[in-house]
Image (tube, rainbow, N blue to C red; front, side, top):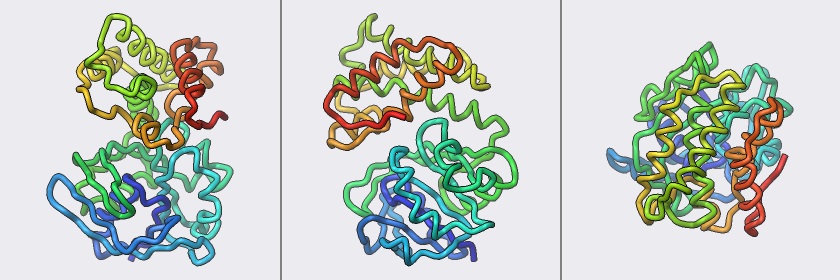
Length: 296
């Protein structure tokens, strides 16, 4: 039996845990801040439930075959007590987080060769501990190779489609291009579609173009169609829709992943000598909005 510990049973971590728990060949443990009795996920195909082992004290954890980290990027250091107990020499650690710096954020905690960066597209919302609604089927991408193939195999019996990609960097940066425009509704607290204008299009397009330029400098292949798609999605965003997790986090008064979503574009732009004025401006404004964020 393969043992898997999932750190962070929020919307993503809880949904992943529930789906993996449907396979009796997998032994699932959830590492949480607060106790929960079970996990119930309303999926597009019906309700699934799981009753994994739940730990709230890292001292009670023991090494497992896999650790899946599904925390926010600003909570990396908070995972250390869990990783210290869960990770042994052969343990693989899957990092299911936003952004493009999965390995950089964790390589001081776990040897880089044991880390598996994960890009996930899994629309889900948590309503209470262990109570989640998944609105669409999920997709996962990992780097091609032995570790990536092993992670893909874990999801073979789920409705989350997992695949290994030989050009993982492009996959990660394409997703970041799609995510970076979400800083606009996080600032305005309303969807972009109903207030769309040429000026707003210039802002959204500028964010995506800067992201693509930095991504290309980092080795990603990002076609113009990706940028056009970001603009089209923003133009068509309906009133009442929450466009991105930083929008939802700001509404809830939670800390936001601004650095992982837009700050990284500014930082890596500086590294490559690429101007990123639109991302820099909006990061500064959102940082000054009174909502907490983390700068590296």
